[in-house]
Image 1 (cartoon, rainbow, N blue to C red):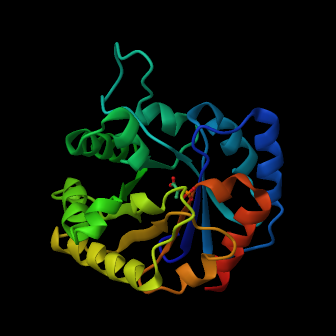
Image 2: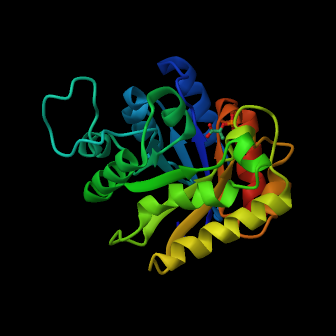
Length: 251
Ligand code: PEP
């Protein structure tokens, strides 16, 4: 899976058992896409549904992913929290960490992200760290400083097994997409930054996220250093998500 393009659908707070079944059956009906690793990140209550539907996927590798995890390790009196080990138990193989909506609505900090990454790794989950600047930071030319600060949570980790999603906040759910040059430059920067922390780069995927859809996917996948996409809105449509997967296969 580390030499494939990843296409990960982040369902956010969407879905119902019946709707999920329909969406999953459309994804399962895709013919073999040997160059793509498909990820599906449903709300945590639906992880088992995704795991059960996809574990014997006839043609394709499908990774159930969680959207978030608790910063607390182990078990305990943390009402409402879901630990890394529980997510693993429910079928998750990877977990998003630091999505911009977690900072926006839950004031998540870098320290919390680091704790979450450590918990994910300890439970055998692949952390998928989301980074990206907001519009003001981009307009001030501060995008690399911002992303470097967000990436610093990976320093000193004893692992080479993680993924990063570059998601400019101004491109999430807005219909605005970073251009190919902006994407390639930032992905190159992220790759070098991560290598400078002492990670060998052997098992690292760098995905782009932000208004990816069936129309722009091929162009985005053709940008240098793009190892896949994190897809929000378009992952809720079987037709659109499948088209993005096919674009990744052909990239
Ligand atoms: C996201 O939230 O991770 C995302 C990329 O959303 P969208 O594709 O809807 O912009």
